[in-house]
Image 1: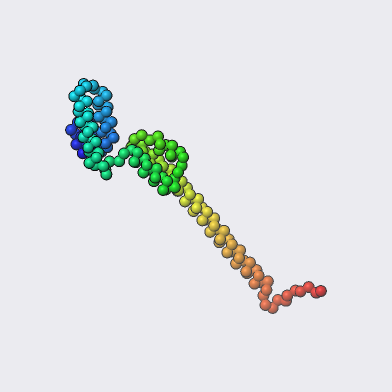
Image 2: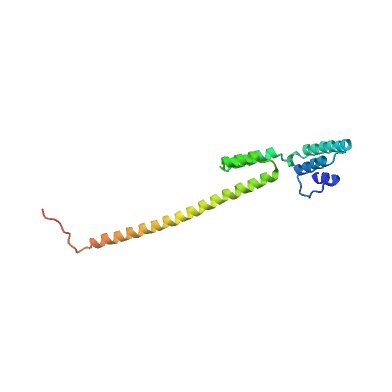
Length: 160
């Protein structure tokens, strides 16, 4: 439906345009030219048509506020409640900014996870080295104890 509006109004937009971009283009065209009444009538008609399309296609239309709420909920569910992220999310005004924000959060959080994974791997190596050293020390102690208690050796006892 959106592509039909774009084509009929000859808005000069690409095929992957969303409703917000169409509205922005229409507003831009309105402010650039002002032959008043006929243009205003067309705008009102197209606005009504857009609103009707929104109503008809409600499940496919996602408002900015809904997208922000979903992003905020996703951050909370993921355990990411950084106040900086919350401030940035509150300042977002377009879907493009929301997408860029999401990509930034994903990149930073996955970076943190990668760093934590490397730290865990390093700690695992250290623990294995300590474990192997402990086993080696235990084996050496057992050998030393067995050698000191060989049969045939006399136990030295102190005379009282």
